[in-house]
Length: 195
View 1 (spheres, rainbow, N blue to C red):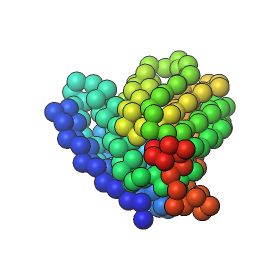
View 2: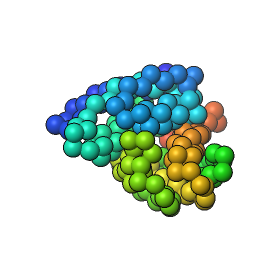
View 3: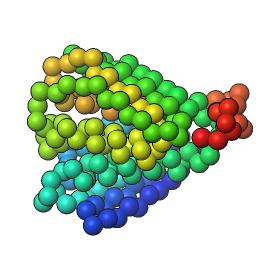
């Protein structure tokens, strides 16, 4: 089983997270930011990953450290669970419709972090989640995991729907990328021999 746990404590945040990449989509999330917890639950269910998270942070400052560090820990725990990445499909993509919103997400677990987010939002925040911090979450995730991530929000009226479609699309793309390809189950999916 590809299971891992990370416990990250800084002067700004305390985050404990575990994941089972071959789970059933079960999630237990404790987050002081309701929408962040909702998005992690969504990621778990749509990626069919078992995800447990206990998140605390310096919300008396603002939400930035908590949201960014959660992205970092999610990337770290997935990277740890993947091990040497032997047999994974490596790349994945999904076009996700969320009511009136449409989002495309493409990932390559290449070991070379890069984020391209193309999105426009009209709101300052969704609940207690400032929309500008979506990029910080994804950047933390991208750098910690070492993934090439492209996210394109084509259109949508509701910023809630657009961000939720991003998380659902990311979950589906990551599910595909993390899946074991039986024909190469003992190989590293790279001409370099390492990811």
